[in-house]
Structures are given as C-alpha cells and as structure tokens.
Image 1 (cartoon, one colour):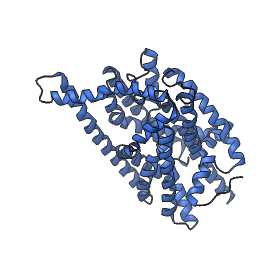
Image 2: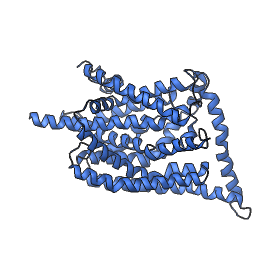
Image 3: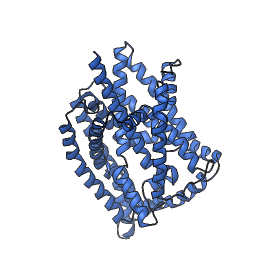
Image 4: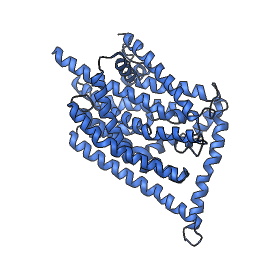
Length: 412
C-alpha cells in the first residue's frame, strides 16, 4: 500500500512539473503580448521588428514557444480534468456536478481576467471547451487520440480554407484584369487598418486604467468569439490530454526508450514545418495576411508535433531529476499554476501599462526575455514555500472553495 501511494505521488509530481514548465513557457510568448500591441504577437511588422535582432527574437519565440506551451497547458488541462473526475467518482460524488461547477467558476475568473486585467485570457476558453470535453471522459485512449487528431485536422483544413480564401482574394488586388480585384482591394484595406489600430493601442495602454477598462467592456464579446475560433485546436488537445493521462504517458509510466522514440519521431518534422512557416512569413515581408494565415492555420501541424515531443522530453527530464531541488520547485509552480498564471497578468500589466510603470511599447523583444526570466524566478521562489505551509495556491483555494460552496481547509 505504501509503495502504491509512493508511485501515485511520483506520477502527480510528473504532472505538476509538466504544468510548471508549461505555465512558465507560456510567458515566454505572452511577454510580447503584455508589452506590445496585440498584432505584434503575430507579426513583427506590426511593432518591434525594426532590426535584424528584433526579427531574430521573434523567430526564436515563434520556433520554440509559440503555441507549444499553450498546447502543453491545454493537454494538461484535459489530464487534470480526468484526474479530478476520477477522484469525484471514487469519493461517491456526482462527477458532472463537480466538473460543471468548476468550469462555471473558471469561466467567471476568465471573464474577470479579460475585462479587468488582460485581453489574452485563456481561462474562459478552457472553461467553455472543458464543458464539451467532459462528454468524452469515458472513451478509451486509442479512440480519444483518433478523434482528437481528426478534429485537429479538420480545424486546420477549415481555418486554412477561411484565411487562405482571404489571402487568395487579397492577392488579386494588384491584377486589374481579375474579377476579384475590387474584393481584393477591400480585403487589403481591412488589413491595412492594423497599422492604425497599433497606434491606437499604444495610446490606450500607455494611458490610465479607466479607458482600458471601457475598451474591454466594449469588446466583451471577444472571449465568446475566441471559443468558436479556437475550439478546433483546444478541444482535441484536451482530448489528447485525457488519453495520455489514461495510458500513462503524462504520468511517466512509459519506458524511457518509448519517450525518446516519440520525441525523435515528432520533433524533427515539427521543427522543419515550423521553420518553413516562419520562412514563408519572412519571405512575404511579414505581410499581415500571410502572418494571420501562418498563425491561425499553417503553423498548427508543426505546433502539435513539437508539443507532443516537448512533453516526452520533459517527462524524461523530470524522471531523471525528480529528486532535485529545482524540479521540486517547478512542480510547486505547477501546483500553483492558476495563481501563477493570473499573478503573471497582474505583475506584467502593472509593469507595462500606463497605470503602472508604463513601459508599454518601449522595450525591445530581446530585453523582454529578461522580464520573463525574472518572473520565472518569482514563480519558483514563492510557490514552494507557500505550498510547504498551505494545501493550495491562493487562487486555487478560492476556486476550490467557490466550486464546493464552502471554505476549504487551507493550512497543511
């Protein structure tokens, strides 16, 4: 019995450490979205791409982090959902009731995060898609993986057709003989507005809080639209997370050779595809139409391959260094991932927005990584001492208490 508990504990440490790496890695891309206008995340042409070093910094983030850490976070959300549902069933609770209460309160947190803090929220997306993913919880892993890959592929096809149609129409703008020339000019004109929107964002986020809040209230529909646009990616990732938890991949139960095989199978083609998509953007001068196609559709397959390869490599790393102090701190960061995610938004918006220090748009892409590293240090430093004394991170405790309708015990 003691050995069973030890094995279970080691598997949870693996999940926690993976979540810790994911929440830290998300910041490596989000840092540009905190510090620069929104479109700068997608294309360096929009902002922060004036020099070769700026382009190199963007390329590094695009290759290594963009979508991969968010993908890993989504996979782990699916795994955690299964873990919590299993625990609810084991304790005689109604798993549906437990799950939907958690998702309802997560949606509230997400909307508050979007409106009051930062436009890049993913919590509402996770809450909405998590309600759909719950319907697949009892599927066996092989079926989950097949359907997940099918849905993901369908999403890539649909988004490629939608944004690719815009690109095709826009390319007709320079051909007066084309019957699509007028429509092409209209598409180009819409994307040309991005430059003006960048200027407006600079003025907005360098200013006081109330105009920012009013702007968010005016766009409060965006989180709901975001669900419709990204469910094709997020749902299959959650389904993969459920499958990879069930079959032991995410808990470190596979042989080391199997993890190496997965990494070697998927990392090289994922890197090559991502490099190809990055090269296409560079070759097009980071044209907004091309950049949006790349971000929304073309980069999808490479992201998925690299996400799975990253997960395999990280499990190997965690297993090899499980007893080390730094992996223990990464695991604690993962246990408090909710607090660290929202805490990062509080810290970064305070640093960059006008109602705080006011550095918005004034920090280069390479320098932003220094802010990222500093925030990683904060996550690693506070999470373990806190969890040595308390059962949950502060926001984890609040979420759990709200979902259960009563204050949960906090001290260890």
